[in-house]
Length: 279
Length: 279
DNA sequence: AAATAAATAGAATATAATTCCAAAAAACGG
DNA sequence: CCGTTTTTTGGAATTATATTCTATTTATTT
Image (cartoon, rainbow over all chains, first blue to last red):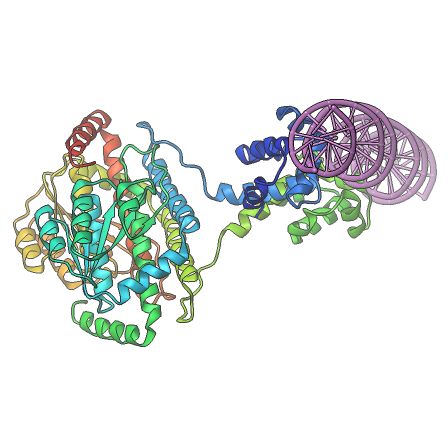
């Protein structure tokens, strides 16, 4: 992929080269139909600089760069842009926008996740005495889901979505327990408070949020953030919630992979248990 | 898209032009890195013929064709395949697989949805006296989420996830009420029973499931199914649940669009209400 | 402040794309 | 079936674009 390639090389480019690189990163879809001269003009420099820049990022020349860029743009347009909602949208358009936003969020989240951190987290979760999961509002749904999922692995996971109960349970925690806080904004008082309380009580704290700059993210021992670009949304957390659940799913499978035999056994048991409840 | 464009134009191309077009359609990813002369040689003709061919299919010239072709090739490679889970997978691979599966499910779901049906459904939901939402297990989470979302629009929506309560509430329903049943398999006894009960009581029934052949789907007045291809999963319903939630989100926004002013008002109220609960 | 290195712009060159034209092939009309 | 017209084609000429080279400027180092 050319875009990350440019990003990587960016730091050790010269000033004018960076100008050009920035322009390309900004509007790659335009550059694809520009000549070296045109691009140079836009950046206040000359064609040869454009060529030098191509060499600097490890591409044969501008012609090849355009091809690579076009390929990347093609991929990109599979991820159609998030378009703001409009009150005139018809049903089909609304669905397309919602689903596209979800797809984008998942794609971007998967790219920004720090897998070594996640690996740590899954080990901690797997060996925890008890896992108390905290979330309110939209995130209470995610919290319940997480508890349900983790429980399928015979991990002791419990969701608390009631403010009072959250605090009571958090203060009851001990070393070896894990407090798992979920909040889209990362600044929901109830969750932040419960996590602080759990931390004071000696529990390990893990955060799942949508903003790396948030209180919840920075204050926790371990943190995961999903990608978030919801300025276009009239309702926040619409697709972030989806990403949160994907993280939970993936975490669960990661934990499962730590002890595959045990996991298979529990799945069989679970399936047997479910047999009777279906037509 | 350039590929269909070539296909369309193919019939009224001259013999040598067709040779060139065929070659391009066969290995577009190669052509992207060829010069007009090279391509011409491969096809036993000359560069000018390549150019003529570009004009004939309605493209400015060979340079532009290559760009379009590269874009198309990029799109092509964007559709990553679902790969089955393996117990040897490392964390990164697990995350990639989970997220990819989610992305695929969302993509396919959006393509298979019948928007006129959905539009009907949103109108029915918007004008319902009360909406009772039924779901157990994994789908209880989706049911709660749906109730929470719909409530934000000042629609009377309630989730019931307890088997007994589901039946009690279903039998209490009247004409004008809507029973909204959620089940991945579409054959969860509890939900199917509750829906039958609601139907008998005179309520309109709406189903959200992952299989169009399921009891729940076929028995309900209105039905939505998401795409499902989970044979690769050790745990069922992993990404279907994500799609269910996306459907809920989109439904909510569709309902909102029916009465935008009301909706904006409720969102403002909600935001004001949430102000105090955050740091 | 002098020396060295790095970066840049613009001229020179090379390459590839595009246009143009004449020859060849095919289609048409008598 | 032959001459005429149209279409198609290949190759030369042209143009545009990309690429390389070099002198100048700018920055860095000692």
